[in-house]
Length: 91
Image (cartoon, rainbow, N blue to C red; front, side, top):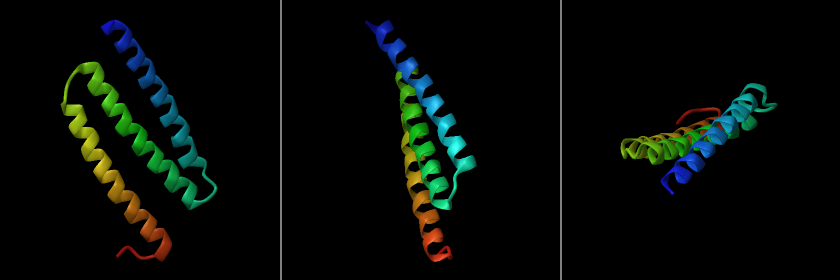
């Protein structure tokens, strides 16, 4: 049963990596700044999910801590960029 779980999680990790590639393409070729901002937020969300999947595969809680830290930094970064785009000033 453990092998099936590891196989499923590994397949899910590969799908997440493919989705990161699609989102990077969207950041690269986005028409507007808002498209690029949303794609960057999607990348950070998928990377957080990938950290959780790696933690499940390895059985190591360190990756969960990395996922939590990255989620917090991603939230703050997204809010800062959105505020900059809206007001054209940082603070």
